[in-house]
Length: 140
Length: 164
Image (cartoon, rainbow over all chains, first blue to last red; front, side, top):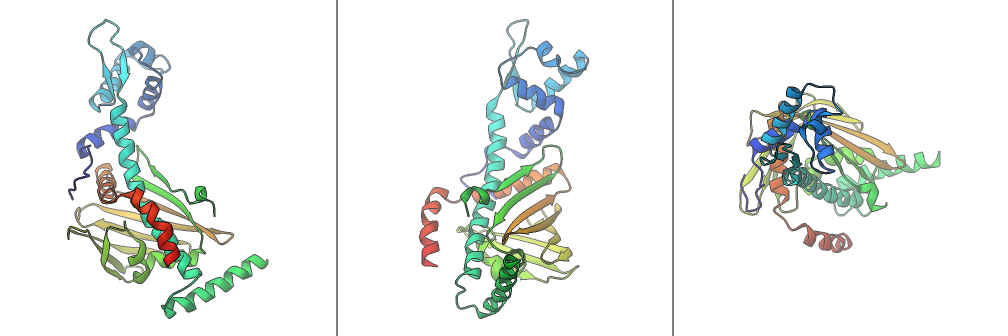
């Protein structure tokens, strides 16, 4: 299924990103980095973890394209890459659009079935029953 | 009904291969359940407007199945099918779901309907076998959904409602 509006994120990238986000320590790191860059030490601070364990988490985030680490200074601060997070968010959003559009059509169908059923007598009799049940509930 | 109550919630858990959606409809749940299971109604809403549902077959029995096919404006067709596992009209419907482009990735869909004051809240839970399958499903929905100009549709909708 390829269209002009194809997603700008590959299945492999999505896998890596979701796998990276499927861990509360790494999500906490992302949350911290959302407030600005931080060093490995700073990122490890809230977690009861060894330095190698922290580094391992950061490597996962880096491979997933969620963070970058500058090479220059000794501090090597980590920085959030918002672009990748946005791609993931966009991708979930588009699924939402698929269903929003379906459901907006369903609204119309339901409205018509309850309000002014057209020529479909089969549905009309069915709707009558439902409306009766509905008014019954309301009267209670 | 205020627009906010018709807001669609979509939850894709990063740790589990599931997708949960929740939405409220201004109709009793018997009607909503039927819209989900009667081919003549499914054809009218399931999928974006740009796609025509050219086939829809339903055998609404436990162990029975369904199949529907969408056709895109470019003629490409996308088939979906599944088997009903649990039918409890109008509360609950459990079925398998296969997007025929990925025939090995069978998911399980659960539809749950709760009615309050004549309005029905629909919760769908799709459980995929793997994260990859889940992601493929989401990505496919994205491509189909993006084929249309939503802004234009937003303008058209009220007119279409009035004409109906």
